[in-house]
Image 1 (cartoon, rainbow, N blue to C red):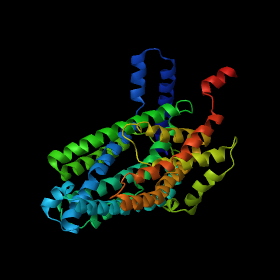
Image 2: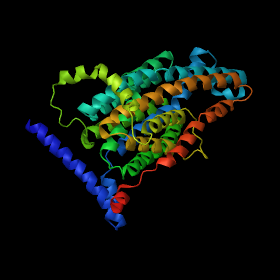
Image 3: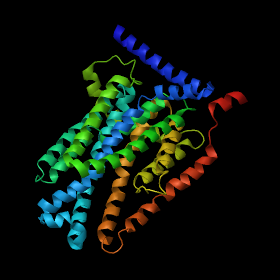
Image 4: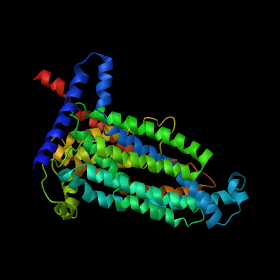
Length: 404
C-alpha cells in the first residue's frame, strides 16, 4: 500500500512538473529558459524517435531484401541477372510483382495487431500505459531477431520474413505503439498545449523518418543487410529501456488489483465494445459526426503515398486529426478512441492496398504511376473534413479565461 501511495505521489509530481513547464513556457520571456523547459518535458518523444528510426530502417531495406531473395531463390535467376535487373526488363517486372505481393501479405497481418489493440487500449486506460508499450516494442525486437536470422541464412524461404513479422502483430505492433504514445501525450498536456505536444511528437517522427531512410541506405551500401537489422534491433531495445526508466506512468495509478485479475481483464469482452461505444456516443456541437469524419480522414490519409517534395506537410494531417480528436473526447476515453482510430488506420488501408497493388501489377508495364492517381482520390474526404472543422474552432483556454 505504501509503495502504491509513493508511486501515485511520484507520478503526481511528474504531472505537476509538466504543468509548471507549460506555464513557464507561456510566461517566461527568456528564450534559453523556455528551450530548456521544453527539453526537460520531452519524455515520450525519444521513444517516438527511436521507434520510427528503427521502423524506417526496416521499411527502407525489407523490400530490397525480398527482391534479392526472391530473385535468387524463388525465381531462380542467376546472380548476374539479379545484380543488374535494370538491364532485364521482363525479369525486373517479375521480381517487382513478387515483392509487391509479399509486401501485401505483410499488410494482411495488420488485422491481427488491430484486434490485439482493441483489447490492449481499454486495458491500458485502467491498468497503465507502459506495459502495452513495452510489450509492443518487445514484439518488434523479436521480429528484428527473426529477420536478422533471415539475413544470415539468406537462402531461407521468404515465408520466414512473414513469420517474423507475426511476432510484431501478436503484441499490438505499430498500432499499439502509436495508440499508447498519443494517449500518454494527451494525458500529460493541457488542452491548450496539446497541439504543441503533438507537434513535438511529429517533429521527432519526421526527423526519425528522414534519418532512418538516410542511414538505412548507407548502412546497406557499406555493411549489408545484417548490420541494418542489428541497428534496428538496437533502436527498439533502447526504446524499451527508455520507457522503463524515463517515461512516467499516467494511467492506472490507483489500480490495486492482482496480476491475474489484470490478465483476465485483458480478455474481457467489454474491451472490444468500449471503443465502439465511445465513438458512437452523442456529443455536443455535432461532436459525434465530426469525430467520425476525423477518424475517416485519418484512415484515408494513411493509405496515400507520401510525396517527397510537395507532400512534406503530410504529417501535419495526422497531427491535426489527433489533436482535434483529443479535444472532442474525455481523458478517460482517450485510450479507447485512439485504439479505435488505430484499428481503422490498420484495417481500412488494407482494402486500398489491395486495390493499389492490383492497379500497380496491371499497369507496371504501361503506366506505373496509375496507383498514385488512385491514391489521390482518397484525399478528397480529409480535405472536406478539415474545411468543415473550421466552423467549430475552439478558442484557447487563456483567451476564454480573459473573456470570462
